[in-house]
Length: 322
Image (cartoon, rainbow, N blue to C red; front, side):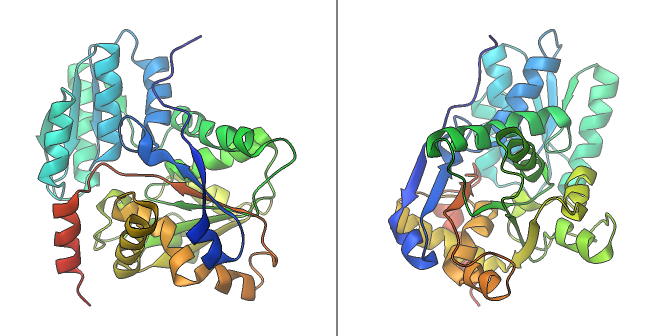
């Protein structure tokens, strides 16, 4: 059997979150992956299938996908080039280099970096590692739900799943996982920050749209266009996908509260998924009849993040003083 690069992460019950929501909250701790986020599941799976005999891999990423690609490439013994936009924190560039990756800074947003990664893959014959839009990634990410189901035990399913959406790779993987374990009727609350809301904008427009710019500080949610599969899932009547937004301030407040209560530091993109617990959004969805009352347990995907440290947190607090 092929070696996994990802870990089977802990599924922890959060007493303080449960108290706030009024039902048991389980946290799937993807922050404890070797690369710092869930991305290693899909990227590890894709690299095993496509990069075994590769001259090298190239990935476009403002952070977590790049970290996962760099880690997996190092473990596989193939060279990695990671193209990042100029909005990427220096700390991430350093961490990528520490994993042995060659880092190139191109353009202002992820879309610019991605165009360069595709060009390099073409001219240098490298294996292109997409950060979120590929069926092999979704297959890899689906393992997260399979693990959660095994931890909860037979016949136990959550009342809802709470996650963040950037380009939609995690959402597609979770839907795939829900299919795999027979949880297709479980609602998924798909969270984005205002200013990095490509899924929400697509749902409102009734078609995939491209945002003019990423204005949110949640840079890792910074894809201007959601992947087509995620949008199609959101339109599918057999699935219950609830798309909601929080502000940067709410995401920041969530990561600070999470740090205080759970002793874990995660990035803004992950804060978007935690915020509904702290802002009362879950209760509002129940009041509106979009989530059941009483709600079964809530499964929160703590997607993690490699672009955060205390200095970064302080700088975010300074920027987002409201």
